[in-house]
Image 1 (tube, rainbow, N blue to C red):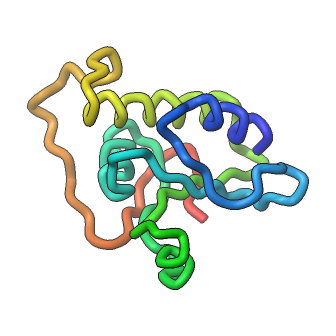
Image 2: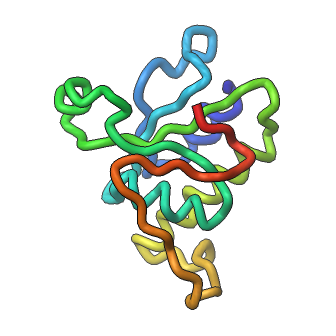
Length: 130
């Protein structure tokens, strides 16, 4: 978790929510990306086989208080590796590139369709869903 917090903190377009001290933070990191809806983050990461959850996470009063509609949420446990976290970071860079023009992280497979999801995205990956 310490590595995940450190690596996501390096991305200027990511805002994390909750305590950023691994000693008191659980295995879940909630975050948003400036200018990108969490459902879009989840859908694009799905294309990279990276699993996160997105939505209000049954905490709509908190989302209202924070002034946001939803967050993206990555869960970590003992079996997650630094490689899993590096893949998440690269996936987030790709998402940012798609929305804001950093083409080096954009897939060169334009024919691939993105699956649409409803209020919560549940995806398949090496990063577990909590």
